[in-house]
Length: 459
Image (cartoon, rainbow, N blue to C red):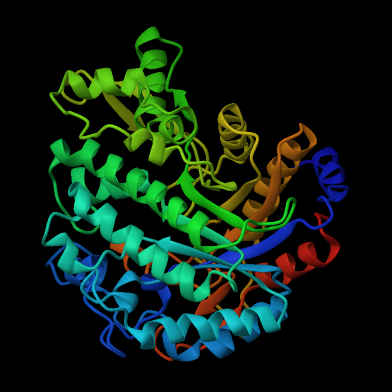
């Protein structure tokens, strides 16, 4: 950044009460996959498939958060976090997806939530961050309507037991990636390569969300106006840009936007699926398995919208008519994940969300993986991560100044963790984890973020 830009950043204060947090997910940090009655998840099974995960890694141990959570909560307090977003492992609560709940699993999350509240850290619980019970997958997984019904029962169980202690609930994390990467592309669990399932999976994920919202309204008192409380969903929005000014690329960007972002925004907030997406899928003989009343359930009013924002996508026309569009990486500098560093993705994604709803918005994930190592003194200097977070927060502040109802920001991630099919190579954490010893070492970015929280802004 130049001198003028740096001076502008130094004055960026966020609104009073802005919620500063960090995020994780159960399978990525907990470990203890076979302890205290936890059942098998689709990620346990996926990790045993040869060649699916880098280095043959799994979440069997991960960060051992299941045993080390008191130390991790103490770390959160040291960082000055105001909130912590975590996910609940469905197989810990219902090992086979339904039936009688596993009390040991409920007790684990009850202890975690109590410790957070004692330290003044607001808990945000995500009900589903990709670890479907394997038993449900064997009955069709998200391609089956039954999974949405079982999800509603799982959600109701947690609302009954934790609903009075957890103020913020997200139903489904990134349904777009579940559908595209899990069922169509096969790069994530359950690892299917069956594109014809895509619309059914997307619809049942959204139906599960709506059913859970209905259960929440019946079981949890209505949140106070203006409070950090209520129920929502976490969508990963990627602004779609044409790779060139050519009309074919402009049309490709609009199509990709409909297939990824609006495929989920439209049913949630407008009671319909986008026509461009339905035409695209219809030409490929994919059909929507919606029953009468489904869209009313999906569109049940929520209290906030969570947004996971990392980068943008460039779109170009694909000459293969079956594909039709192709996504390209942007030309800018990249993170260790190969994602273009493009800070305006924050303002653009927030603007897209604001097209659909005036609800409070939370950036439920934003962060970057970089290759950094401890120095001779053991300190970990990560200026690239600090620059990434600073510039994306500056973009968030720009959206706030334009009137966006942004209420909070969660760094991905609190800890280095199991990064899905990429194993333990990419490191996103404010806190480094030595996977041999499981020792935690805060990076320089952790101290930087603590200072941001303390001053409620950038300097």
